[in-house]
Amino acid sequence: HELSLVSALPTKPCLSIQHWSPPPLGSIKLNVDAAISNISAAIAVVARDHLGVPVKVWARTIKKTSPIQAETDALLWAL
Image 1 (cartoon, rainbow, N blue to C red):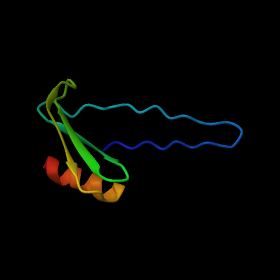
Image 2 (cartoon, rainbow, N blue to C red):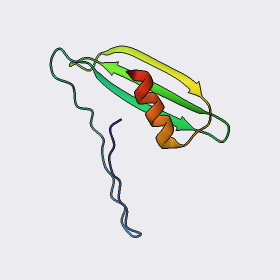
Image 3 (cartoon, rainbow, N blue to C red):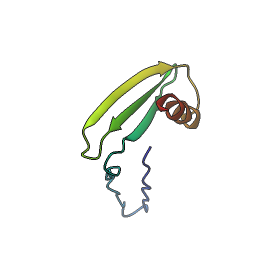
Image 4 (cartoon, rainbow, N blue to C red):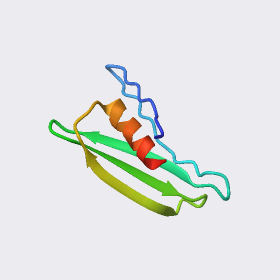
């Protein structure tokens, strides 16, 4: 999962733009994400080639857990 920090001052917010960077030629890059609600969670994985073309995309629901555990579950599931 690619992370970017967003910092904000009370009087002037500062926004950060996320940019996806491709893997080396002949490699596949996996990006994972997780979403948590009050009753459940979901994880998703996107596999892309060096051109950014999706090779595979998959998602599933999991039992409710912490955000960091859900992200970890997504990483383990992707591998």
